[in-house]
Length: 268
Image 1 (cartoon, rainbow, N blue to C red):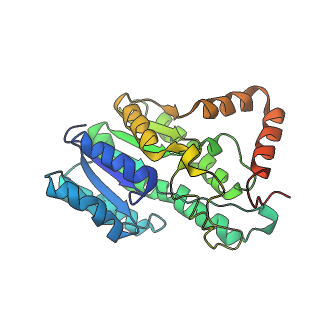
Image 2: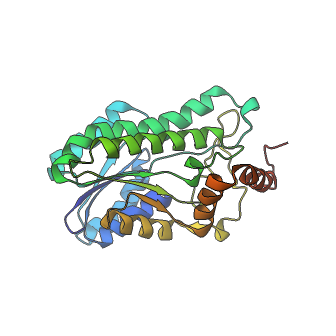
């Protein structure tokens, strides 16, 4: 990855931050993108002081013009793009019947349209370098999770979008990776939206028992180097995908029962 130009959205925390740090360790030139510019600068400062090449671009991926500016600033600064990692995302936790539709729109605007906007403006540049476009999806993009209807819908949409993008450009040297972590220890659950669009606050899960963001980042970076098409991070994730294919009704019950046991579960 030495001297490769890598854009990471949602880089202010969690998986995005860990991917950026991992890429900097490989001597890539990294562009950090997120809404919180202060956090991005805090991440960037020690690396810039040590001579790493890093660019901060404040970006709200829900806004098309922000995504266009992110790509333009990268090209202006570095002259090329080798890897775009669409990581920015939010989650939710609520029963659909009780959920305000603005919550689902927020999920789609951030998770799906954020990926589409950034990819649209970066695609020509990445085709020029025969580089990589990455979507950080989820096992929820394979198996719909009760209580996470907007999250699952957005991840299914991302995977369909990226599959078509890969096929359309299969003769042009484009690499497309769909990375699907299982539950990961990060801020995404604390910031998850409730039925009225307010932040959940406390995570319903025991975070220390979940896969670390650092481990997920290492696996994603290796998959980019190896130009893999798909990446499922954990054994549990692979098992869910397998069961969904051969025993979908059984998996429905397993998933329901697990989600229903969460503290303050929206499942009645």
